[in-house]
Image 1 (cartoon, one colour):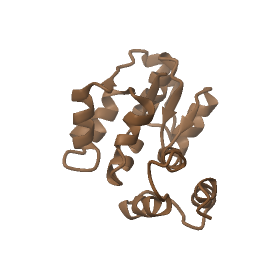
Image 2 (cartoon, one colour):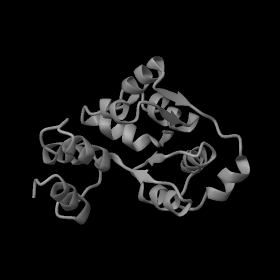
Image 3 (cartoon, rainbow, N blue to C red):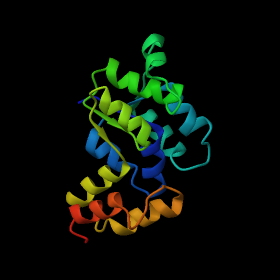
Image 4 (cartoon, helix red, strand yellow):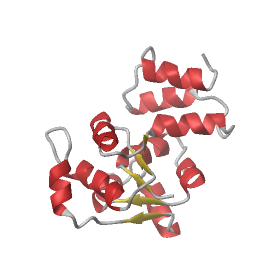
Length: 167
């Protein structure tokens, strides 16, 4: 299984002390140099940077560069940065089974390109269904306190709780 991840799930799962779920569920992840830059270099001292450094040392996350600039340019749009385009391009070039991303524009474009997408909430729902976390709602509330945009009366929040029978 080839899984590519954007920076969002790395940062958000680290913020709620659930970074370990990535290794547990996916065993190996690919990131782009741009994601490494966002999480590790620009994010030094913030959620995800220490966890990413450890994962890179343990080699369950590796950095892959996509040299296909024409593909990256084709994917770039007003709401899709070069970094986002590189993540999607990496998933396409490596025939990824799954792309991990939270940004709605990235998710939408990735699905249009034929990729299967999962985000932080999907990973947390899976962890709850597997019994790895006891309750989903407190973790979702922690995510929101961290700054993750999620409306507690909105469809995504409510559907997640329904899926794990907490609503």
